[in-house]
Length: 121
Image 1 (cartoon, rainbow, N blue to C red):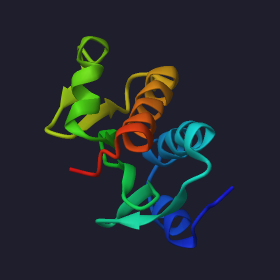
Image 2: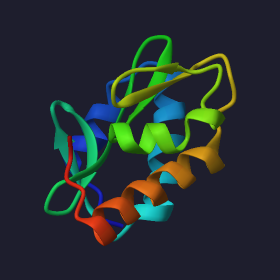
Image 3: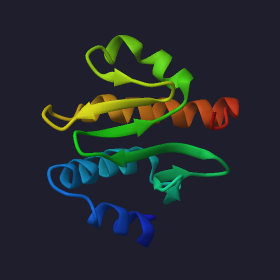
Image 4: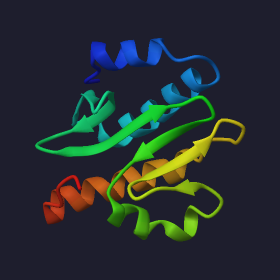
């Protein structure tokens, strides 16, 4: 595990249920992207190599996963019902986290970066 004290501190400051959900989100990402470093980028937890792979965060009503727009496009049919931004998807705190979907998105983003050299934004 490549955990960061800044990420741990970020998570520790969150209120429940967001805190528990961010831990689940981090664990899902880490299960796929464990070879990457963890730290905060733009004041939120991130996994990164030479560039950011994914960022995630906790908010009052949801947890969010930040990826590239191309990753969102690749999964747009599976993201129906979630609030989507230019490079983010929000998972409401009152719904179960779609762990496998999150893992699939992270794996896609890693492949995009590793095979195509696709940088962050």
